[in-house]
Figure 1 (cartoon, helix red, strand yellow):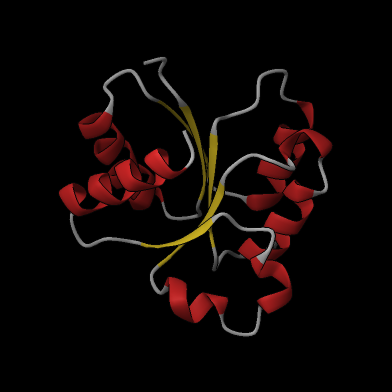
Figure 2: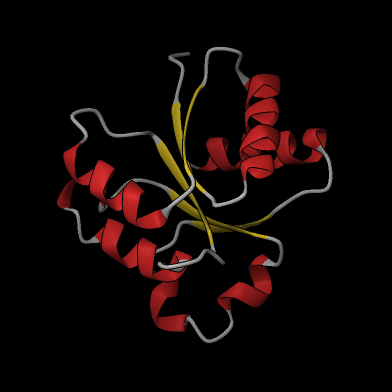
Length: 130
């Protein structure tokens, strides 16, 4: 299996650390790109020569929120089919009021209280979108 690249947009550095540990449980060679700012991520994604396999976006971020970030990423032509998950402390709550945006997202994932739980959830997500 070829190692995958994961792109995490989350303003919380602790989440990046937890996400990285969970990925290591799945695939030691998996690559994580973390950006703490949505606008920085959009600018970078517009210029990437090799796109990531998966994108995870925190719903609640300063300056540019997760849902707005999602819309901007989906407007970049080569990200129209990339699996993108909204990554939040309460994914079901974050979907409320965003029915029009639901078609843009591949999944909503709750942030997990433990690394093994997050690894299991990420593994299931990867199996859904190989």
